[in-house]
Image 1 (cartoon, rainbow, N blue to C red):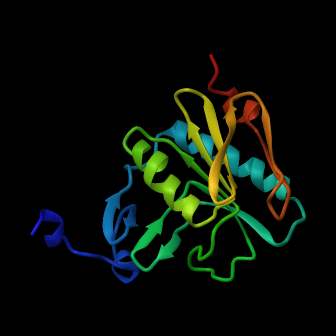
Image 2 (image 1 turned 60 degrees about the horizontal axis):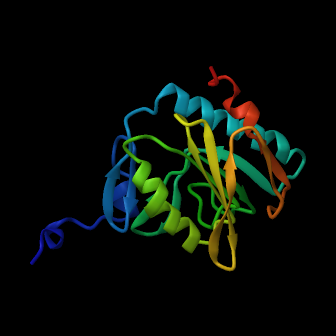
Length: 181
C-alpha cells in the first residue's frame, strides 16, 4: 500500500466542522493561504465591484466573493470572486458559476493554474479569470466546445463577458491602476 492509502478521505460534512480556511480536493484537505495579502484582497474587491456594478438591474445574477462551490461531496473550492445566476441554494454554490476569478498567491499558484483550471473547465464554468498581482495582468479563458480558449492577457483593456446571462465587463486598467508605479 502507498502512503495515500492511509490518508483519511473527507466529505462536505467533515469540511463544515473545520476551523480556518480550507478547500477539499477529492476528499483531501488543502489549507488555503493565511489571510491573503492586501494587494490580493484589493484586486479581488475591485473586480467584484466592477462585476457587481455592471450586473445592474439583472435580478437573476449575483456577484460574491469567497463562497464555497461544492462540486461533489468530497470536492469544495472557494473562488475569490464568482458571478452566479439562478442559484437555487443559499448555503453554497451548487452549479457552475458563469465567471470564476482567482487571484494568484505564490503558495496557491499551481492549484489555481492546474487543478482548479481543470475542475472549472470540466464543470463548464463559462469564464475563468486568473489574476497575477505581481505582474499586473489577468488571463481570461472562455469555454468553447468544452475546453478553455485563452482570450488574452489583459492589463489595460476592458473585457466584455458577452456569454453571461447578465452582460458584464471588467476594465483591467482600473483594476491595476493603483498598483502601477
